[in-house]
Image (cartoon, rainbow, N blue to C red):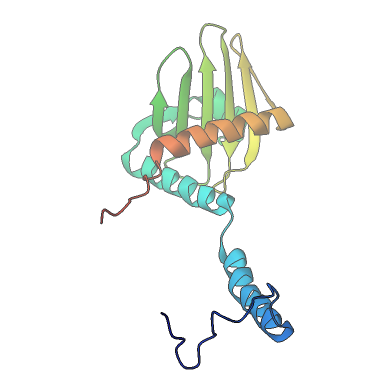
Length: 180
């Protein structure tokens, strides 16, 4: 036989399933105080992406290979008005498609992501800001380059390429689970 403890609700009392009005209000307020600040304190994923992008730029400056942006490309991108080679730090993936991530060795706000398809003789170069947004786009087809204002399709391709380099240069560590 179980005896109720002093001050505890008796289990022999019938339950109506309803919470008293005052207790319901207190529970609602408690939930609001706990839930809303934590929802607002969470940073959006774009902030995390921007942080990882900044880390990718820093890693490129510290560990990237010495290279140079060709004079005609640097001129079309607006980096070198007098068509000079621009020294960069670079990471590149060489394959059927050549991809590169470059940061100007002198002006770290000049970041170039490029994709080259040698079999089709096409390349695209994105000049982007330190925050990762497109400043200028240069297309090269059959050896002839031209610059253009970034289109929606360009921005979508840039987002894909930028994420490719962020994931490659600043991989996200898998969550550690503790063993009990």
